Length: 497
Image (cartoon, rainbow, N blue to C red):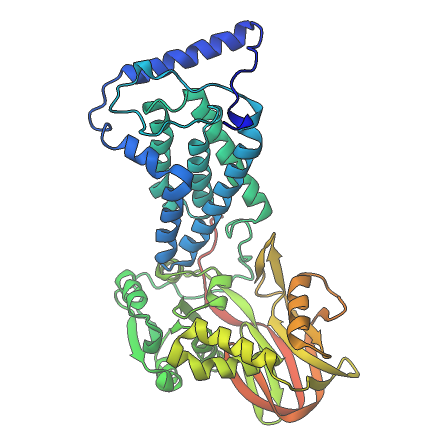
């Protein structure tokens, strides 16, 4: 036995209040042991065993992540993080602070008892802490998933008393500690609800209760059929057009000719094309995420058909900034990011391989090939000086960190271009990694950051690649990037007043 389970310490002296509470705790345990619960007899012991070492919760998190909805994935990650913190606290502090013996099992029917009795101290209940931490963490990110997980977590906590593994107070203390761990994780990494995109500036748009006047153009290559069908069920009089990527621009132009609201379902590149059309025709845009990353839709606060249909029915929309680039006769807009240097090359290599081996493997292969390439950094005149650059990143809006989580935009109408520069030199991979680890620091030996409304680069070599919202084009000589403040109107669900 380890020191953690040494139960031979002297008993404390008498204390009236403490002794009364312990006596009540024992009576509650005995009351539970004497009850005959036929419907729970075959279930609770198995449920208790399934939660050993967090197996039940890790399996639940995997099932949630497999649903492929961003809110479910975030809820699963938050639940696992909360469980991990609770388990760490229980094992390092809780079990060693109060050396309470396990309950005597005489009153517990043999059929209920666990086959392998725990040998650690009784207070607090680790199973209950893990269950409460996971369920609370999930609920803080997604109330709907929390409602589904909560009853299971409650049953696991109950099973610890039912099987004779813990006193009721052990379970209560563990549950409180687990819930506290979930709130502590939220303090480190705020939820989306805490850091939602500001609902301003609001825009006047038509409310379409049944969707009449909305023409949704969907990229059929993105596997969006399920999502657009869900939207059409919610908005039965909307018009749906599915087409191949090569036909997207023509179909969007055709839709803009008779739509009151132009809709698009696809990845960031498809949304970029739709935004250009909406700007030319002066139409509000309805975005349904249908790609791999969907940065713009998620930063906007639209994660699925339910979010978008609620905004369209209620006429809820905001105005957002648009980034624009120009280089000679080449021009375009970007809703997310624009970049020069190694990233555009990475995008080109990734696109070459993605149809053969899939998106994520192609991205890894592209990164390895580009960062190992023996070539010189990009030369450009930046802020009045000629500089070698491995990467110039320009974000449409300022990117922030969410506590310890990756960055995202909290304001899509802040009037700023978020410019990040990785200086040229030896070992591009090392420099890019150091810049990534620098995170929100505005300056480091390899990395600099500044927020401006307009940026001009001169001396760019002909044939230099520029990536914008996942698309790639060539630029030369002079490149100008600027903001179009509040240029695009987009539907998004607004928070309750």
